[in-house]
Image (cartoon, rainbow, N blue to C red; front, side, top):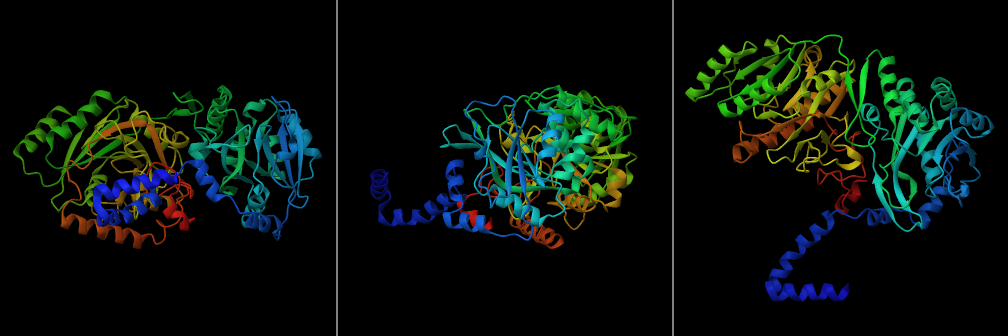
Length: 568
């Protein structure tokens, strides 16, 4: 290693000279600080030192509960050692019990347990030494917690290699209603687990039992579910990925029953991705959707946008609200006239002021007749025929504030798959420029789920909710108005949902151009300052639908870089 380093140094001196090589040193240092680390290196960097571990295990909390680890014996391999589970004994505060599998067996062994908190575990899992320390810390920080979960990874059978980390978001209800992203470790208050087992009924097979308990917890104690953003369980594996588990139709039945119990009949369909379920809601009616499109010249783009909607969209009860903003090309107005003559859905409204995305869309919303508003950029093109009704299905659920789509650049790479707070100085799109067909970390590109925000380039929102939120904030004329609106909706207690089934191309910035002039850059900097003032601290802390172990330097959900370590 040293020899190779010296050789590279000599090559640099020969090629660039002494001063040239010295000038490259700061860049090399920056590259080392921002380069993505392999997981095993990242993990070693975050392991507690012997001193830290001794301090953790010697720490006395105000509440020192007893834990019982319950391990299902189904499929147990020879040589299994229960003593490896749940890390150290932590001063006698844990016990390990085995059960045969199934609800009745779990209830029976639970009656014998002495623990106040129950850890459900698989026989092929092991816990780090400080797992119970972190469980205890979480219980003391959140005494109301009914259910606690954490991050996880895989470990080879010889215990030498760690891989496939799953860094999870905090509770994301619609993510959980699409797949069991929570997995393990799974820590219940004993009384909560007993109540959930009673409600689960006797017919749930062992394979689906934990998912059934999670969905029941989502119904009964949603606000008492806590996430610890640390890897607290290792799945012992021969090399297969964590996601490659057996997912049967029982999960689909559980999701369907959840929605039926809430009064929302639905059909649950297997997605093309193992373990991911897609929900199609059975609508009691087909409300009018107002498709609000700001436009200025660029007739070919508007023609492509509307043409794709007309040709591909399966949902039929919609209208167009076109907001004309200072077009100058004669052909534009000829096209408007032709469009209105041919298409009775089209209504044209004129906005004469300078470009202000928020004000333009607010005007469109005020003139719309639809019960649901679909804000859509004129530089989009529909891909999936069911896009509008898929978004509408979620938008019609009580408690949903807005629904966003999966958008692609013209080359087929991802332009938008949700928005995370803290990318850049404010927020940014997820998985930008990942290839079409990519699944993303924990399959988040292809799974419906909650996010803090979605882009208004394609966003559906109930009209009543939009008006209660006050519409788009017109002080943000171009950038971050959608983030601002979504944060307002979140403050109102409403969910923001990303639906990957709604797929469109987005030929971004065709109408207004890029931030490539001093004037635009000054305006952009002002909008950054303004939204940060409106939401103090919101973009500096952890986004609940992200994970503090992941980087904010790139938008690919990779691990936090060395230069960011001070932020942990």
